[in-house]
Amino acid sequence: MGEKRRAVPGHGPRPKTVMVLLALVLVSINLRPAITTIAGVMNQLEDAFQLGPQWLPLLGTLPVLAFGVSGPIGPWLARRLGAGRAVAVTLLVLAAALIVRATIPALLLPGTFLCGMAIMTASVLVPQIVKTNRGTGWWTGLCTMGFGLGAALGAGLVRPLEHAFGGSLSWALAVWAVPALVGAFLIQRSGGGPSSAVAPNAVVPTAVVPLRKQRTAWAVTAFFGLQAMLYFAITSWLAVFLVSEGLSSADAAALLAWFSLAGLPASLLAPVLAGKPKVLRILGPGLGLSVAVALIGVLVAPSGAQFLMVGVLGVVQSAGFGLAMALVVIRSAGPLTAGRLSAMSQGFGFALASLGPLAAGLLHTWTGGWEAPFLAMAGEALVLAAAGYLAIRGPLVSIETHKATAKDNPGQSSTPELVP
Image 1 (cartoon, rainbow, N blue to C red):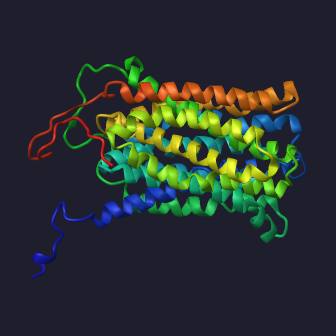
Image 2 (image 1 turned 120 degrees about the vertical axis):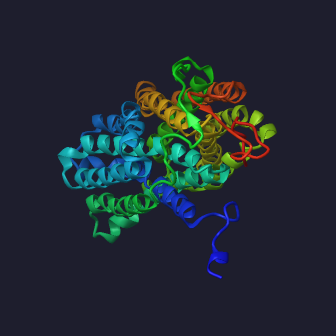
Image 3 (image 1 turned 45 degrees about the horizontal axis):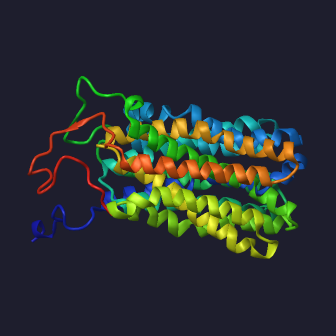
């Protein structure tokens, strides 16, 4: 009787797979609060950490700069430890960096840079683990929603936590090390699923076309980088812009949290919709155009309408991030390609994105207003639309071949399909 109670492959998710998915979602939640907590209290840092105003643009740029230089670390670490253990190690580093930068004022800048490196290393491996576990668009959607939820929690809870800790901003920032430690424990226990270096039926041929010579890889990288550049520029300066429009610091911080919260459903649904080829063809260009319109809307809207306009911007911006993550998975031939394309798109992409907060801040300083930064971001969103078109229409990215058989994939070809 006991033998008959065993699960049959293909009949429902295995507990191990479910655990991997839950661990990935928690990991994703941990990969934004280190940034949005700082953005939400930017105007307090001068007093709390003796940080001069001239350092604020650099502080907003440091995490993204770290993203740009640490992209290759993820695949390198995964080859030696396995993807699950590699993510666990990076979350431990993230927890340590969160504590150090919050408790030692002199280490706020280098600690923030280290946070960015840890975040990038873990982020690069998320699509690889999804691809290894043959995750559908729902997997990618839940992970991207985790990013948005983490961003919203970081921005929305930093001030209540400050009050809860008796006005201590340091403790309100350091406490985010706790969920990072929990995430490290869970992803370590799950192991990240099957061997996450190469898929079971994948072999690396002796001669492959490098990613840098595949135009679709560059289009995916451009799409990822441009949407990230917009995201970090917006999250770094939106609250400051809203205060200049007459809102209180508390209301501005709440709207920054609303920006992330409003986009949660879109970040979940965009990867799912991306699995439908007819929708995918218009999704990339359409999102770029929508972001441009939403940015202009925030710029010209009166204070009373900012709740609506910031919410719309959050929806289309989060959908763009969800599509960027989905493109890494669905435009890759297998886990190995997904890991390398993830490192390339996020590495080069975030290097480009690091210019976002700095450029927006400098444009504001030079012009004395917010029209130039917002118009520049709207123009960038139009380029994002073009990158999305090319990423979707180009050939599949591959640095591996698959020896697929009817037994392995009954009724399917060796080319990865777009699964909803």
